[in-house]
Image 1: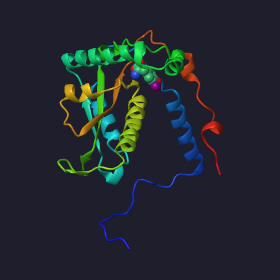
Image 2 (image 1 turned 90 degrees about the vertical axis):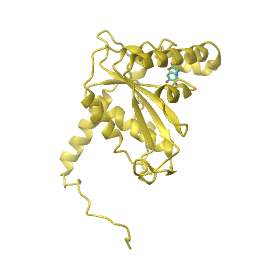
Image 3 (image 1 turned 180 degrees about the horizontal axis):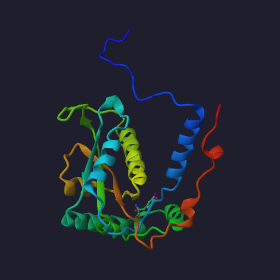
Image 4 (image 1 turned 30 degrees about the vertical axis):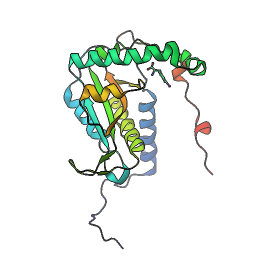
Length: 224
Ligand code: IYR
């Protein structure tokens, strides 16, 4: 018995099997071209593109449809300089003392280091927050559920949307990230989840060869 308001499902018009496979394959190919980029150009990105990508992120499934995310798009050069300084301070500590050898060994093929100049070069910096409390409508103050899962899914959609718009991204996670809430002026109940950097790759951008290694289907999935 359905005792909640509902309406007919739309948006799943019939598609023949061949078209379905073509679409799945085309999307797989598109996404296979995504690279994590660490060298960006300062070429600007239209705000409308970022708005569309954020709306895609905001369409993600979430616990009780509470949409427990917030995206701060940081444009102010002052804020970006503060973020870079704070992130690089954390990262220097990470690379110089905090990181166990096993972690450093895992990162070696990717060539990452404490230099985070992209935080001031790339035109789009999006700090992504998870909200402990909120609710389905703006201004609600209810408990949120599955916040990390929900924000992770939204972030995945955001990355896919930006990639399909032709923009490169970098998921950056300085730890701890509490400085982000401060700089973005976010309330105490919001936890920084990730800093997403986006823009056009630098002309001479490179990718680590190791990053191209993706596991084959039989290593990541099984039909049982
Ligand atoms: N946060 C550091 C280290 C780092 C950790 C992982 I796991 C990566 O996949 C990449 C980097 C940094 O940004 O350099």
